[in-house]
Image (cartoon, rainbow, N blue to C red; front, side, top):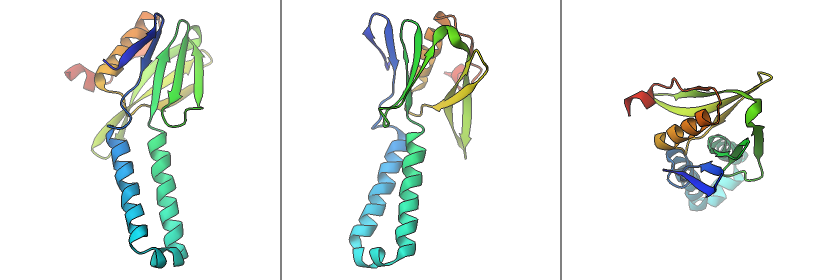
Length: 162
């Protein structure tokens, strides 16, 4: 299981960053763009349209990869959300201020990804994509949240088959 006990009361739910399909695709794309620029740098660097297009593609690739790499921590009375790349980002929820946690299926073409929506007691919600978590880790997270007396909407159909 990818949840590990850091101390007696802290559990971390984090997937392997380097072996996530989305990260591998992004790295492959960035390597392809880098090889393309290095192959003919004089042609690419003199063309402002190419510079703009390549820069835009790199920024979009990095942004869409980074927003899918959140992980979760359950502490004594806190639920913490962090990002594996943007290590300075951190959102802390008090467990008693969480109204509900819901799994959301995000469809991308024929594949779907799982995200977690946190709804606080003021009914403000925030969606966190965690593309590196395995189904086993998701199940462990949901079970531990239920133990913390958090209402969990786990109607995600893919979990019922496995």
